[in-house]
Length: 171
Image (tube, rainbow, N blue to C red):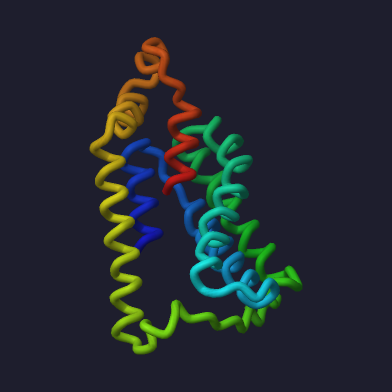
């Protein structure tokens, strides 16, 4: 649901259909898993890996993809996601097609499935609040202005590439 929230925010504000978030989510999941399995970090520090690594990977991809528009943008993001699937299933550090077997729970207090559910529900609530805040912010208004009339927005000094890049990184 968190991936869908970010994807919906990006698509609604920019008008660009993106499937890159699925590949980036996979990169974040594997980054977190590799951090737990190989670097022996706990659950909470691995969340930093799950957020930072996809953002780093997304930056150069977004610079290329955001220079396109419409269906070309969709095709670039699909190609990126398929490349990520191939890469993650063939790398040795990710366990190849067998995947990772790394288990790190969020801590002693989240020892039952119900408590873990409420933790993840809290993460979803934070994502929804963040998306709502971004959509209602001045930044969200500027991105909508770019979506609605890009030549006019550029004439007013708004950088469509920069705004869309930041939004893709956030989503």
